[in-house]
Length: 102
Length: 79
Image (tube, rainbow over all chains, first blue to last red; front, side):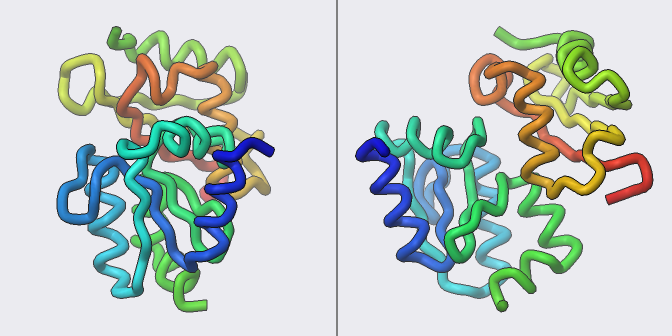
């Protein structure tokens, strides 16, 4: 396990809802990250974000950790949920609301 | 470098031969696409695993030369 892996592991285990994104909640730097934040805002649950643009090690490492090539990436209760397309599908079907409430 | 929609479709079909692939060029710029991929091989897999199969078919281009591909996947009889 690399150091990046350990750091990502600690982040997803320490936070019930954590979004790896480009930019911050107030200033997302990509349309997909912006959409992901908007969805989480609608859920009304507390969430943590990690700006991968500020941390090259995590930016590269998260893609391997999740076996997922793009940012944003959402983790809920330590499990990888998906990127913004899956978040949108699950939000529209109500699954995401159930997942964070469970 | 942008990719042509037909190239994306061909890559997906090469890895997932039964896939029905619909691709829309969202912005008309050859760089922002939405794809819907339907394949029997997705049956029983969750969305993450379905998308991973498509990303694998694209062989590392996703997140690189292919920046924006909105993806929707399904098995033939719905989700």
